[in-house]
Length: 270
Image (cartoon, rainbow, N blue to C red):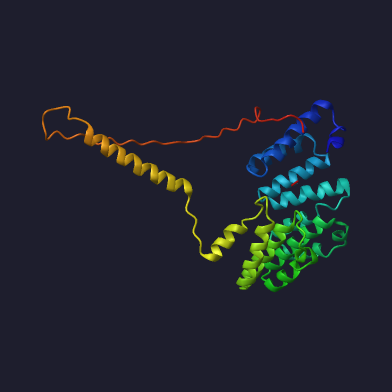
């Protein structure tokens, strides 16, 4: 990317880089804001492949699949690379065209992908099979040496999870549970919710620890208030004097304000 930006005037390159940094920083947690930054970068340097690719991923993250596909195609024309082939196929799925995604899964470009790209393509193809209601075919699509391997690679948790999910959809619950467990075992970074799926299958309900603590604190506060009221002497001799109840309403609000100018960082999956 740095080399591509060097073709731009220095000030323009810095502005584009700052917007691309914000795209990378926000795309997982604030995809809409990442998308907004990508549009700025696109207006500034639409002929830079890295900008088109970043715009594609930002559109993809906000489920603008038609727009994402157009940007990925543009980036691919500029570079001639095939790395974007799986995500382009997944855009076809997002646009309601699983048959087209399956055609792409059988194209010669797939053979040019590295191992990670081929696994990703397999995941997309299995998803397309499920879109078409072909559960058994989806299961077979995911069965591969990568799935059977005991070696843990970056793609392992997602591959095992997808296989478990397909098995569960097909009603093969025992096998599904086994593979959800395998996915969890390999998922050191929390890339999947395999633990939640296992708990759901086992009928385990989680209670929010914060809620429990909040209830305990409320009980303690009530007890202390009762003790204080019992020990406090009356302020007037009238034994029938009633004290008014005091209701305390505490409202907490965390407002997050994002200032586009202030948030710009220095010039810098997908």
